[in-house]
Image (cartoon, rainbow over all chains, first blue to last red; front, side, top):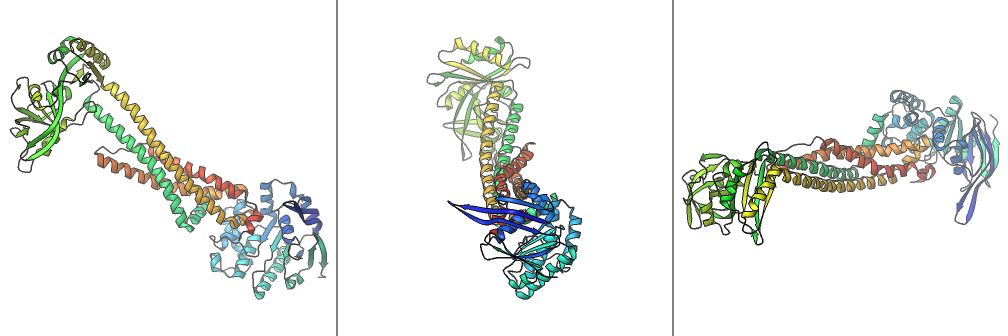
Length: 227
Length: 390
């Protein structure tokens, strides 16, 4: 599903060139559930941005479902992001002036789905993540765990192939974090969406069937748990 | 989608009410200035046209000049002109001066006109009561009073009417006629509504510089007023002891006024344009702050699959909504201002048909123009940097 080959990403800061990713190669298959761990500055976020088509590698090849996505022009990449990828962030990033279902429906609006249909799908997805009674709530009226559920509904509403989560439980207390983790495992199982989670929490990582660790700009460790 | 975008823009603008209000006021003042200027221009044009219609375009104004200032027209030769010049139907030489008049303890400063019998038909003044000065009223102390002057000299118990006495210096005049109100004529050097009219011999008595320097004339309906004007000048020149004669036709004045009016409108338009530019800069400022504040939102939208164009139109819609609202209020403000001007000047209030669509269009265009740069800035944000903003 995701094929990253010889990905190098370097930043030029003044005269020095910092290499963050160094000839990284990673293949992730359909329906897989991976965690990515690594120390600060190990390039986790950079890798996530490249996978999420928010950033371009300096060198290397990247295909999603066989399609060379690096060759696409910026607006085509927006469309690919919209269609293939769902994002979940550590601090939720809901739009404060839109209620829960409008937040969840946003990717569909950018796809040009008529409002009534977008609302129907967003509400169905909110129900799916356990927020049937919070459709009209504004983000400020929701708890952290509820906000993250709205964000997950927003990431999933467009039926993406890949769900990218950057520290999705980092801002939540352990009990809620476990609930959110259970939700990830559930949508991976039931919707068949590929899930990549960046996390610092070994407890969260331990529940993932495949565990990656970044180091030295490459995949330093690739563990697969027996199912 | 469009409805949604507009609702969202309104919501965002309402969320930062104070800032939106400031930008709104900027655009409102700009659009208001443009509308007020255009409408006042239209009102002034309309008023001038009305005055010329009342006065007729066949009127001619004659003025004698000398090296020391005003000159003297030869009375007899001037009055004989209609018989000599084809196309000249009437002529009325007159003297112009001014000073204090009093009646019943009321004192006013006013214009004095020393006139002949023909002044009334040439200047198209009508009598509300009594009669006008005739050729027989030479040294008789008779006067005709303009309507505004009569009103000012009247007291509730003693209205100025035929038979009233008006004192001018050491002379006491008996009122023999009161004029009906008439539109002030842009051709005349004095407003007959606010004037005391006496015979020419009496005029020489009461004026400090008793010169018969002025004249009004009417061209025949089938004659060319400019040709008649030239003929009068040529005919009078030999009989002038000194100085020159200038004859101006209403048509020439009208042309002069028209070009003056164009300049006036241009100037007012420039003032409005400057105000709008200031309003536009206000919009730009506020949009830039808004873009800065909403970087993370922009990042989220880009990550979710918004295109650059989606982000641009998000901010452009806000700028358009803001300037449209500002423009609408500005139209109201401008019309109110122009109406106030019309009330104060006593002119008829007219709304120029182009003013409203022009004002609204110009303010939206300003908003979009100045909103464009912040919108492009927003759409060029790097999603990674935007998402990292806290």
